[in-house]
Length: 192
Image 1 (cartoon, rainbow, N blue to C red):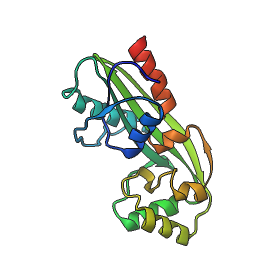
Image 2: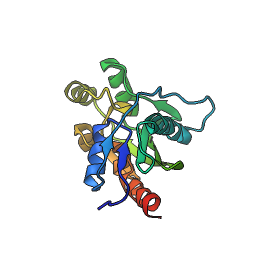
Image 3: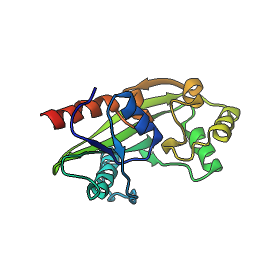
Image 4: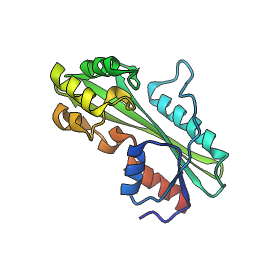
Protein backbone atom coordinates (compact mmCIF):
# COMPACT_ATOMS: atom_id res chain seq x y z
CA UNK A 1 0.00 0.00 0.00
CA UNK A 2 1.35 3.40 -1.05
CA UNK A 3 1.66 5.94 1.76
CA UNK A 4 3.79 8.65 0.14
CA UNK A 5 3.00 12.14 -1.14
CA UNK A 6 -0.38 12.89 -2.77
CA UNK A 7 -0.56 11.61 -6.34
CA UNK A 8 -2.11 13.37 -9.33
CA UNK A 9 -2.88 11.27 -12.40
CA UNK A 10 -2.67 13.41 -15.55
CA UNK A 11 -4.96 11.08 -17.51
CA UNK A 12 -8.64 10.42 -17.96
CA UNK A 13 -8.00 6.85 -19.06
CA UNK A 14 -10.33 4.46 -17.22
CA UNK A 15 -7.67 1.75 -17.55
CA UNK A 16 -4.94 3.83 -15.91
CA UNK A 17 -7.32 4.77 -13.09
CA UNK A 18 -8.21 1.09 -12.59
CA UNK A 19 -4.55 0.02 -12.49
CA UNK A 20 -3.54 2.63 -9.89
CA UNK A 21 -6.54 1.62 -7.77
CA UNK A 22 -5.54 -2.06 -8.06
CA UNK A 23 -2.03 -1.15 -6.91
CA UNK A 24 -3.43 0.63 -3.83
CA UNK A 25 -2.21 4.06 -4.93
CA UNK A 26 -4.68 6.81 -3.98
CA UNK A 27 -4.82 9.64 -6.53
CA UNK A 28 -6.76 12.55 -7.96
CA UNK A 29 -7.28 13.07 -11.68
CA UNK A 30 -6.32 16.43 -13.18
CA UNK A 31 -6.11 16.82 -16.92
CA UNK A 32 -5.27 19.64 -19.29
CA UNK A 33 -5.79 18.83 -22.98
CA UNK A 34 -2.51 18.78 -24.89
CA UNK A 35 -1.64 18.21 -28.53
CA UNK A 36 -0.07 14.77 -28.75
CA UNK A 37 2.73 15.92 -31.03
CA UNK A 38 6.44 15.16 -31.14
CA UNK A 39 9.49 16.36 -33.05
CA UNK A 40 10.37 14.65 -36.32
CA UNK A 41 13.24 12.20 -36.00
CA UNK A 42 12.50 11.26 -32.38
CA UNK A 43 13.17 7.56 -31.71
CA UNK A 44 9.94 5.55 -31.47
CA UNK A 45 10.65 4.52 -27.84
CA UNK A 46 10.97 8.22 -26.91
CA UNK A 47 7.71 9.37 -28.52
CA UNK A 48 5.33 8.22 -25.74
CA UNK A 49 7.77 9.61 -23.13
CA UNK A 50 7.79 12.98 -24.92
CA UNK A 51 3.98 13.06 -25.03
CA UNK A 52 3.77 12.06 -21.34
CA UNK A 53 6.17 14.91 -20.51
CA UNK A 54 3.83 17.33 -22.32
CA UNK A 55 0.87 16.01 -20.30
CA UNK A 56 2.77 16.33 -17.01
CA UNK A 57 3.95 19.86 -17.84
CA UNK A 58 0.40 20.96 -18.69
CA UNK A 59 -0.92 19.74 -15.32
CA UNK A 60 1.94 21.18 -13.23
CA UNK A 61 0.23 24.56 -12.83
CA UNK A 62 -2.73 22.81 -11.17
CA UNK A 63 -0.56 21.03 -8.60
CA UNK A 64 1.09 21.86 -5.29
CA UNK A 65 4.87 21.36 -5.06
CA UNK A 66 4.53 18.34 -2.74
CA UNK A 67 2.15 16.50 -5.10
CA UNK A 68 3.47 13.81 -7.43
CA UNK A 69 2.30 13.90 -11.04
CA UNK A 70 2.02 10.69 -13.05
CA UNK A 71 1.51 11.08 -16.80
CA UNK A 72 1.59 8.35 -19.44
CA UNK A 73 1.10 7.74 -23.13
CA UNK A 74 0.85 4.45 -25.00
CA UNK A 75 1.64 3.75 -28.64
CA UNK A 76 1.20 0.61 -30.73
CA UNK A 77 3.98 -0.03 -33.25
CA UNK A 78 3.75 -2.35 -36.25
CA UNK A 79 6.68 -2.54 -38.68
CA UNK A 80 8.21 0.56 -37.01
CA UNK A 81 5.08 2.59 -37.78
CA UNK A 82 3.01 4.04 -34.94
CA UNK A 83 -0.63 3.01 -35.11
CA UNK A 84 -2.81 5.52 -33.34
CA UNK A 85 -6.43 5.44 -32.28
CA UNK A 86 -8.83 4.57 -35.10
CA UNK A 87 -10.67 7.44 -36.77
CA UNK A 88 -13.84 5.41 -37.33
CA UNK A 89 -15.22 1.88 -37.79
CA UNK A 90 -13.48 1.27 -41.13
CA UNK A 91 -10.15 2.43 -39.69
CA UNK A 92 -10.54 0.13 -36.65
CA UNK A 93 -11.24 -2.82 -38.95
CA UNK A 94 -8.22 -1.89 -41.12
CA UNK A 95 -5.93 -1.67 -38.06
CA UNK A 96 -7.03 -4.98 -36.54
CA UNK A 97 -6.75 -6.70 -39.93
CA UNK A 98 -3.16 -5.40 -40.18
CA UNK A 99 -2.37 -6.74 -36.66
CA UNK A 100 -3.95 -10.14 -37.42
CA UNK A 101 -1.44 -12.99 -37.42
CA UNK A 102 1.40 -10.59 -36.62
CA UNK A 103 3.56 -9.39 -33.78
CA UNK A 104 3.58 -5.75 -32.69
CA UNK A 105 5.02 -3.67 -29.86
CA UNK A 106 3.13 -1.69 -27.27
CA UNK A 107 5.26 1.08 -25.75
CA UNK A 108 4.11 3.12 -22.78
CA UNK A 109 6.01 6.21 -21.78
CA UNK A 110 5.69 7.33 -18.17
CA UNK A 111 6.71 10.54 -16.44
CA UNK A 112 6.67 10.96 -12.66
CA UNK A 113 7.31 14.54 -11.47
CA UNK A 114 7.68 16.00 -8.00
CA UNK A 115 9.26 19.24 -6.76
CA UNK A 116 10.97 19.91 -10.08
CA UNK A 117 12.53 16.46 -10.33
CA UNK A 118 11.42 14.02 -13.00
CA UNK A 119 11.74 10.31 -13.68
CA UNK A 120 10.89 9.39 -17.26
CA UNK A 121 10.97 5.90 -18.77
CA UNK A 122 9.28 3.67 -21.29
CA UNK A 123 8.36 0.01 -21.17
CA UNK A 124 7.80 -2.24 -24.18
CA UNK A 125 5.62 -5.34 -24.43
CA UNK A 126 5.52 -7.52 -27.53
CA UNK A 127 2.07 -8.86 -28.46
CA UNK A 128 1.24 -11.54 -31.03
CA UNK A 129 -2.23 -11.90 -32.52
CA UNK A 130 -3.43 -15.17 -33.97
CA UNK A 131 -4.88 -14.84 -37.46
CA UNK A 132 -8.28 -13.17 -37.00
CA UNK A 133 -11.24 -13.78 -39.26
CA UNK A 134 -13.16 -10.88 -40.78
CA UNK A 135 -16.12 -11.98 -38.66
CA UNK A 136 -14.07 -11.77 -35.44
CA UNK A 137 -12.71 -8.33 -36.32
CA UNK A 138 -16.12 -6.85 -37.20
CA UNK A 139 -17.75 -8.47 -34.14
CA UNK A 140 -15.17 -6.88 -31.87
CA UNK A 141 -15.33 -3.44 -33.48
CA UNK A 142 -19.16 -3.40 -33.57
CA UNK A 143 -19.61 -4.64 -30.00
CA UNK A 144 -16.67 -3.04 -28.17
CA UNK A 145 -16.18 0.16 -30.24
CA UNK A 146 -12.43 0.51 -29.56
CA UNK A 147 -12.18 4.03 -30.97
CA UNK A 148 -10.38 5.48 -27.93
CA UNK A 149 -7.66 2.81 -27.92
CA UNK A 150 -4.26 2.88 -29.58
CA UNK A 151 -4.11 -0.04 -32.00
CA UNK A 152 -7.93 -0.33 -31.95
CA UNK A 153 -8.03 -2.92 -29.17
CA UNK A 154 -7.93 -3.50 -25.43
CA UNK A 155 -6.09 -6.63 -24.32
CA UNK A 156 -8.47 -7.11 -21.36
CA UNK A 157 -11.53 -7.29 -23.64
CA UNK A 158 -12.92 -10.11 -25.79
CA UNK A 159 -10.35 -9.66 -28.56
CA UNK A 160 -7.49 -10.23 -26.11
CA UNK A 161 -9.06 -13.41 -24.76
CA UNK A 162 -9.70 -14.99 -28.16
CA UNK A 163 -7.18 -13.32 -30.43
CA UNK A 164 -3.89 -12.92 -28.60
CA UNK A 165 -1.78 -16.04 -28.34
CA UNK A 166 1.31 -14.60 -26.67
CA UNK A 167 2.79 -11.56 -25.00
CA UNK A 168 6.34 -10.92 -23.92
CA UNK A 169 6.56 -8.31 -21.18
CA UNK A 170 4.12 -6.59 -18.87
CA UNK A 171 0.41 -7.30 -19.48
CA UNK A 172 -0.59 -4.09 -17.68
CA UNK A 173 1.69 -2.09 -19.96
CA UNK A 174 -0.57 -3.13 -22.85
CA UNK A 175 -3.55 -1.85 -20.83
CA UNK A 176 -1.82 1.53 -20.63
CA UNK A 177 0.40 1.61 -17.55
CA UNK A 178 3.32 -0.60 -16.42
CA UNK A 179 1.93 -0.33 -12.90
CA UNK A 180 4.56 -2.43 -11.12
CA UNK A 181 7.37 -0.19 -12.42
CA UNK A 182 5.28 2.93 -11.66
CA UNK A 183 4.73 1.79 -8.05
CA UNK A 184 8.45 1.04 -7.69
CA UNK A 185 9.50 4.47 -9.02
CA UNK A 186 6.80 6.25 -7.02
CA UNK A 187 8.08 4.73 -3.79
CA UNK A 188 11.66 5.59 -4.75
CA UNK A 189 10.78 9.24 -5.51
CA UNK A 190 8.61 9.84 -2.45
CA UNK A 191 10.61 7.86 0.12
CA UNK A 192 14.12 8.19 -1.21
